[in-house]
Length: 317
Ligand SMILES: [Zn+2]
Image (cartoon, rainbow, N blue to C red; front, top):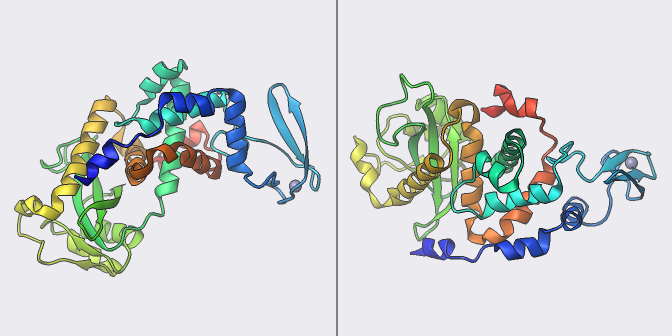
């Protein structure tokens, strides 16, 4: 099966990681390269010339044009973090190269850091993934399904369980029917209005959508997408059709990963980040070795995210 090639790829080995990112200096160089691949650029005025100085172990660049001072980390996801960069890189390595997701508790153990530090690192890196995946549009043949975090994929609807939240799972298939990209998005519920909003945001207007017979799914047509009537059955039985095989595998893996990795978290508040992490890693699964550098670049592009910001409900869901 095509999936095996993905599962058996080499990825980045532990020794490769330590060769490239084993010291603080190596990590600093990598961050500098990711941030300023063509040399210093002032975040304030765009100037290219600066003088450098250090305060303690922190290097600063002072723009020759506007005198603005910046460190390597300022203005990135690493902003104001006192954690050594090599620990950040170790976190990115563990998160990007593991088969299942890596919890904050596991990061705490593996990195030898406090729980609050591990929590912040994990939440910040997941937020990077949320923002990187936010604009991903699925196109062509897309299969969608309804699922719940904190509940059975097929079971009673979320009523009566506060920590059971609905999400849409969607996968774009290529001409051979193999999965290319996926999206996992929290929704208010499986209503026509919620599915219409989701489709307008994340589906290309020329996509062809297959779903089971749940009566909210035809609302995807409000985005301009076509809803394949031949797949729509009158009941749940249609999920056994071949085109649903991949989405069932994806949802099964997602559920195993989340259940096996995380004991409990506030699904409604933080579910979006956990789903985005899964989505980010799935959508880059063909080249695992490249995930760490890509995550580093994404972290540079993501602005500072404070703990208060990360904890606020407004930004969490
Ligand atoms: Zn400047």
